[in-house]
Length: 313
Image (cartoon, rainbow, N blue to C red; front, side, top):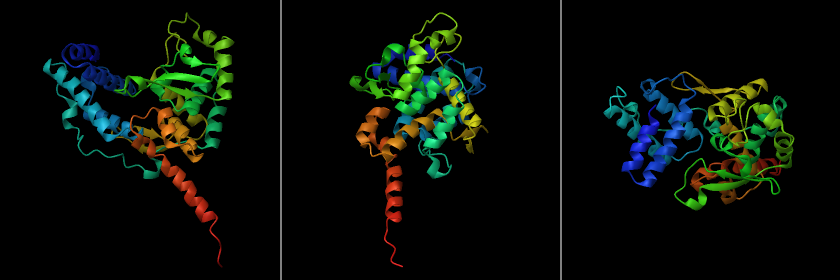
């Protein structure tokens, strides 16, 4: 969709920060749009962008961050429009001043899996790679885009720690990467996948990338493939449900990679993890986003208060 040309143009004429921000925004949008049957840039319509905004909102992005991303996208389409590559800029008809979280049940805004649901999901993972993927996101809370970017060299097996390149770019270079930690159960899967050679057997071709999660064609997994796989596994486990239908008529499911990431946060908040630690582990640039998870701790406290209230009858 001429993204590379636009980014080269931006890099030569704009400040480095502008270039980096636009690159992140365009990469996120193109990854998202891959799930649609779009062949050319002219196939992108305003509802695709509105659906992307909905997805970002449901993933906990701050509205200010989303507006910046949409402005970046608008600059891309304006560039294409000036060169007659598109009939019009589809962002022009998108209201970005007053967008709201999609009106699904407000209690399902943060979609997460219970422990029992997660166990059911694991039970239908018949391939080692699929089980590794599901366990990885559950254990570490990484975004799908971060999971597929992990290379074997990023994993500190002795300390069960992974250095992750943040999916959300920070202006602070010290926060371009973060460390996440994993369980003994995931270490067992890594041993089988890496040390016992099952990853190379799965590849079937020469390893050219060094990425942890790979396809049989020798490339790293795509984010869209991760999303599709998790949805399919949840359906097989009979824990999938449709929350709402988006503006393009596609069903939006409860169990997604985002839901696994949310599960990581919700269960740690319920166990009492300090919110600042959770922010670091999840790679949130704004602690306000992380604070959304505190309501689940408040729900538990409320239930406990009601349960232990003395009976005066």
